[in-house]
Image (tube, rainbow, N blue to C red; front, side, top):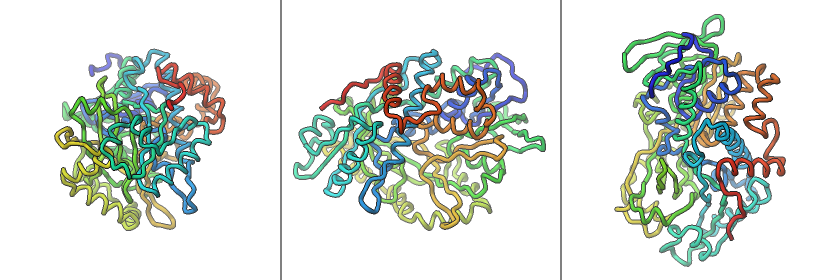
Length: 505
């Protein structure tokens, strides 16, 4: 990407660390809310969106909780808790509102370049799992955000929905599936690059690739001194800013530790790597048209929920299965094996040890995954595609995730399978930690950050008016207002060229 020719002050108003979907979303929101803000973006790699936001690194589903079973856990009494699914579905609708605004303003290219419709399905087998899926469907179907979800135990119906999954399957196996036709596939890498391309052309914005933030230190006046190394010239530079957002994926934790704010004490990270099986047979790819999610293995992290996944990547249809989890001490795909050891500090040692003791099944699961042979991976694939052939699939490395470990007064330390925004009390710095669902809920996450870090401005008449222009439902609840949710979904679907017709029978 060529350098921005416009000069900006040496000390920008805002510094964004990491060129992923979170920084792109926050940068876009801030420039729309306050065009006069100066922003400088630092990315340690020489390309944009190359880590967690890249389509091949797992950020490609458009998580809306339609098919992800880990968002609807079964309670001890046998009922299904849908609260997290509702929250995620609402957040995804908010994301679509903002993306629709961007499309209308010609900020992004045609919506098909980053979002496309694709049915979302959950698939299970076995008496117990079928019973769970039926209860899940009944609970979700009572909520307006999930209206139209289909359920079937009929093998003939399921064969129409997902022929690859049913081909060659034991006819005596008890199976069930749900289907939401309004599901989507989102290429967050393409969206991220489109947002940064627009930001780069705006006055007061500079994007610096191959720049590594080495140190952060808060001055007595509340501003932050940042030390950055240019990997091209090997030169270091110091600058100051009033606000920093650390959106560096797995690299956020080490930078938060360098910031040394009280709110960041006690946080640790547990890295989880992944791999995909990617189909290389065009005939097989064409036979599948869905995101089919199953139940995760006991102790597995959310990013390892098995799924047979149709995606559109750079305009081409792809079929992936996985991801297979693994363990690496790296915090980033392009990170260092010393990332985990160097992240262990006196203030997070006990929480990390406690979390490790409480998550022995996860450790065992990851060890088993690392030891998998090609035959083991094929066997896992055949649970979802019974007649799969090894020669039709290639093994590819997926992204690296860092699950959050935080202090807990009762447990000592707990492992969080979600995202967490850590903000300084003065609102001068914020860091995003964690993984799933991440990108799909990026707009809601960044709106929450604005409330916490820009409390005075966000309540101003100017910002409120602009926020409601960008996100028409802002300040209202799509989770409780069915009519508003239907209107919002109809509008975003029209702008984003998505289908909202009645689901197929």
